[in-house]
Length: 255
Image 1 (cartoon, rainbow, N blue to C red):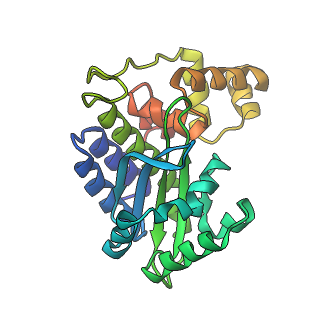
Image 2: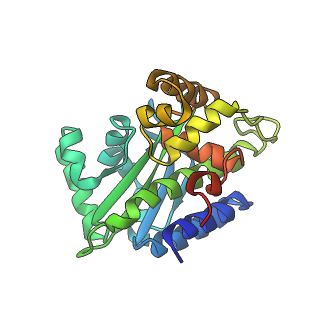
Image 3: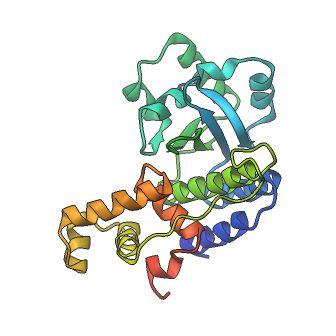
């Protein structure tokens, strides 16, 4: 099965998930299919770097127990690095992103001791809400699977969106009444630009294909992002795919 087909399979599974446990199992299986060893998906309360209601992981039990018994996670440099970036990053790049304290260096050393060696983290920023992150990790002696990194971004965003919506529909959740929020509706021109963005086209190339200026394409994409309340093109594509305004066939064509 191709990586694209596996991503499509994953999207269908998490979209139909009726519990966080189901999302955890589905993402754990996908993590192995894409040649990683562990994952962690968490929601962050940015102002305090605290952890929100979404906490999904299949990290080693010893690490989970350590984090659960203490406030050790406040020393996690990955959380801090996510505040500095909207783009995915490898853990090797963290020292270039932030000035790591001795506690943060010790934190990463302890993580490596329990088998969390190499990591690739996808920040997920949701304006006006607690944001999130998803880390995919390999154990000692294993490099990150370079061919799986693009797919990891989609796995992270789709899983977080599914978990976020489940939590928001609970009584007392952000939606209050337990109902789903109304889906934003994109215009046809916005959708045209989103499809080309999903295909990796620049604003200039998209403009040439649509008969628009690059600045106009940019404005359509920015207005679409505002409608969905997202900060990146990847999150915009994920939301549109998740809600059915786009299909994978729109993005990749007939296979």
